[in-house]
Length: 293
Image (cartoon, rainbow, N blue to C red):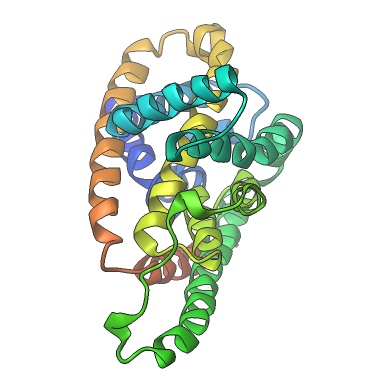
């Protein structure tokens, strides 16, 4: 792997992990489009240098999210300790901590059992293209269902501006949090976006786009971090030999790209929807199907 390839894929990982267009799918499709076939084959292998490289990028992305939401995580951590000490949930931070825990359990269990099999089976250009197209349909369908849910509310108001903007994250029940977190399971298929499907699930539970995005990003942090730590032996083992410089370069740009991406998206979703990302997924997915079929 060259340093140019490491930097390109690092930027790609940092951006697409948070943009609702699938980082796993792009880590397959972009090298395939660019003719970096030795990387494409490594994605679906049992063990490879490419997987070791991607571990470093995931860890860097998780660190960027932790840094960006550092105040939230510190408050949630203190709240979690209080719940253990007092054996009750009193405030917003306490509830948010447990909400994130229960929402992370489904993908944690399923990922631990099936991640390897799904990756080796579906992390191929054509499969990733098909799932990216499906990702576009999920985003588009989610927006349509969300709009239908809001029509009666707006109709009962004097104007659309008078309609409530949406529920707060802490108003979600633990069952609703588990449902939203379970949507992350779909992201085990290369081409389905983790942030995209959890945002759609959040929207359908009454969150607005800004709060759905925020919950999605915070929910992704422990999952990405845990996945990176679980695969850390690949990075530290023989698969990472001779790649430490490229891994460092790729990880640095991935972390910076992820930090910039989450900062941009939090502002973007204050006034915008998932529609641009749905169109992108449909167009790129369809073109990739034609290219790799």
